[in-house]
Length: 478
Image (cartoon, rainbow, N blue to C red; front, side):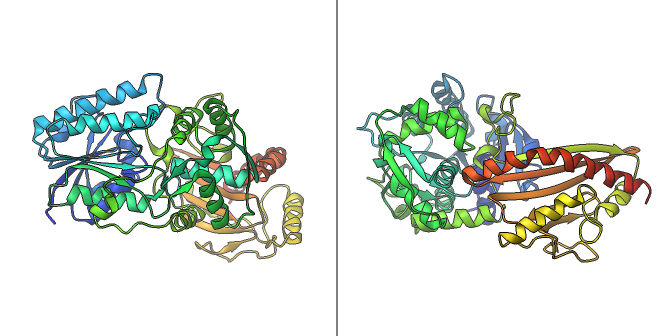
């Protein structure tokens, strides 16, 4: 395999953030084009790549210079009324820059859909972008994929939340539409293979997993993999894409503008009918069950390397009307205090929490919560703690997930909950002032998870402010 300099667009997005480390593992030189370089600061591979600030609607000569391959993973779905037209302009600008720079190959990840069908705006835009690249004069490999199943992908999050929240679903006719979902790992492997092959493989390739299913069958498969009771589907003809998108926006973390465009595409079959990408590039695709199982395992560990909300899309920007949903899937209670006490002293006090010392506030309520947890089969507050905090140790009904003295302490709840919960403290020092941020976060599971969060919300106002104040006060007298 020849070593190439490969330009990757969309490296802060869902697919791009997984393609880059895979290219590095394949021994390639990677340059990332990003609008906001700071978003890559926490990426574990950032020191191994060249980062260029810019956008696909700007001058790309510096980004394209001396590159052999350019990978296009940009998608502006749902961003305003003219987003499809803007996608074409971006593609034309990208193709012209690649031509001028002498790039020898463009690799583009597009969307499945038969040309003979009346494609949705979303799928039609995907294929029009591919046509721009194919007619640019630069050899182009277009990979068309449908539903991508992977931890925290938009399609997977819609599937996961709908099935987990709703045991009975009133569904539109599109649940009977056939699709051929593919795992994110397979998509990444295909993109990497297309970018690194030494052969001229120009053309369109269709990517799908081993199973062709209806959307209803896909939801039933998810329920089975997740250990849920079989879901009941009641199809009705009256649910328009607009109504469906607002319902999805309420039940899932997928924003309404994105949900609306995705739903409009669900009337089109997205199955492999022509040149198979997995066959052409020697990839053995996973089954739907294996893709879901892998995604669930990653989500359970809270370690998804990228999420669909990582992309720089306008509907992920927080608004005052919807702060708890914008760009995230978790509820949170955040408290902040400042103190002259050093971070070392404050962290030492914080590290003594739990066990016989207790939780600084509303000790009776903590005991009651522990008793309730024991009654429903949880660990309760009886496990106590070790003298020194270590990652992986139990701390009452929490598990220590991260200890980075004197900056961070994160606990994961192991009590019986309709969701996942964490309690995190972050400390930072600026001159003579230490700032401590305490965050109680909760990722609900189903309808009961949401009911649980709002039912305990009043108690948060009683417990958490007092707890943080007393931790700071105790550290000051330490």
